[in-house]
Image 1 (cartoon, rainbow, N blue to C red):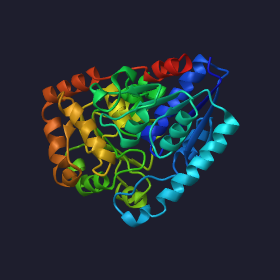
Image 2: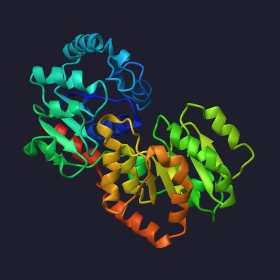
Image 3: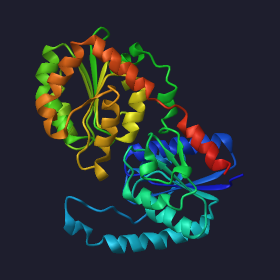
Length: 361
């Protein structure tokens, strides 16, 4: 039985929260296991992982910057330093297995582990695999995926379809709509729109919502709005005095938000999509256009192909957000069909499935 496990990755909630869910499931199966996280110094995992009760070591690593080539000048040295740091951590901790969940720290950690013959596992959350994971997959022990058809990226015999690990509070939520509305200080009997741009926020979605706030009020819509930290003061000021709007930088108890919502506007990160499949609410997806390999668009298209969501381009969200919402609200049959279709795509208990596979290779 495994005694020591390293989990590498982070950068966004879409990598961190599934990793924590897997760690919790491993602990449930094997209470004596020691778990160490490795993340990128300065990224949100350095805060969220300790909050969940796990130790984390930071390494100096960054990804390729597509928007500013000059910022990549120090990338080779950062990668070299990260391998030295990883070697030191590995030699000290001596893991029996290593799991990569995506994010900058995954590559050097798994690459080093594979060179040492340590069993390595990958969880690929997106429908379009990142280049690093494709490369690492060649020597991985097993690759857990959330979508069908991933043989185009990984060796077929190593793939296991598990879905994406979801926080237990969401996957097994018993929160009622009234509970959710009360939590945010909103009223029953009104359509409620949840707007969430991922754990880091989304400026295009925020600006679109800000632009259309008068229309939200005119249509009698309530709003739960997670803005992220950037320009948060500006968005909160817009909601002052409006009892039908809740605004905050981050929602820790997302199960409350999902329960309260009638409709959801969201980015299309893997974690967001997995949670939307569980909660089964009509959703408008606005993929982040600069995601690696445009994987958020691929995620969204997988739902659109099943008539399970609406896709709105980032460049068009301000112009068409309210009209798309209005179409959904005015067509209850379509909304109900979308709810059923997105819920049918849900794969539950991925955290437990992955934990069992890692713990009993």
